[in-house]
Image (cartoon, chains in turn brown, orange):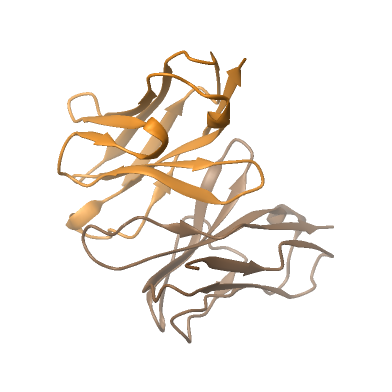
Length: 114
Length: 116
């Protein structure tokens, strides 16, 4: 089954404790992206990756890191989480090409930082 | 630069009534436009997309949207609401073929309530 998976689905952590949220897709998509969803703010793009070893900042990259060493994986790293990073996070992927901008979303990771 | 404005964070309709969810966009280049739906506790799913072909776009579950350049709008409609349509809907814009096409900006979302 074609899908985007995220782990963990739920995470409660404390301020300053480094964490990684994994994202993996099995559709051989070149493009991957991370979003955070907050009430009243919709989805805001954190980082995106056009291909392996190619990443760029979205609208809200502060406090986050990403890497793309393999085509299928795009982990999101919070080096020193803070309470304002409490949010619902979505990973998404899409194929390249001029008419293939549809994004496929993972199920989400709900992160709470205390 | 690009942005999306969704008018109405909450919309209520009766079952069987017309659904109209409003989206206005701003883009410095010809845009690509999308509507996504999010059911409770799930990720987003594409409903339909406009990529500079036909201005009236039909999507899944009976939804459609019309691209109106003069009004910079891309409103989502469905003739008859079903209870299963209750969800949150997001409009999104990207710059399309003019470059930076993978940068997508989402609206703040509209929660649709369907009243029996």
